[in-house]
Length: 210
Image (cartoon, rainbow, N blue to C red; front, side):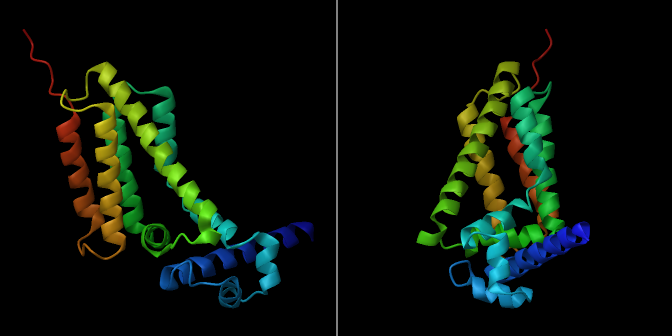
């Protein structure tokens, strides 16, 4: 009975998150109320508050359940390095684009984060968390490019900072334009080509043998 109750609670929580995700995507975060989410999920407003403190808490939970596996790869790469960090980083970026291209839930959440979230007062903490996440991601990229620089595999025209900012801007731009419908082509096809082009520019040319 306890196990069944726990499973039912988890199912209710998922129903609420599913409803919030759809409504945030269709209406925007600021224009969606907890009452509307409760009705769409087929639960009471009290059930929503049982699982989430407020809309900001619900928003954070929605975001966390679509975390990309490639984010863990970047953490590991920045922490422990690699004999070829740029190759690993390139594969991770291409994998992230492929994952988003075939996962409708991640597409919706990316669109919500980038285009449907008006960071008004009640969403102040999520806004700050988003900023911290961005800063953390850029810091991870800088560390990875620093490793490449020490190994001599980062092209001389680039610094770890400019390479990190360039890659972050490329990835965010590709994802943002695609989920917003600005680019009608398949992200899984053109995205990896753009990533390959970026890394062709940042990887140092092989040293010539004497």
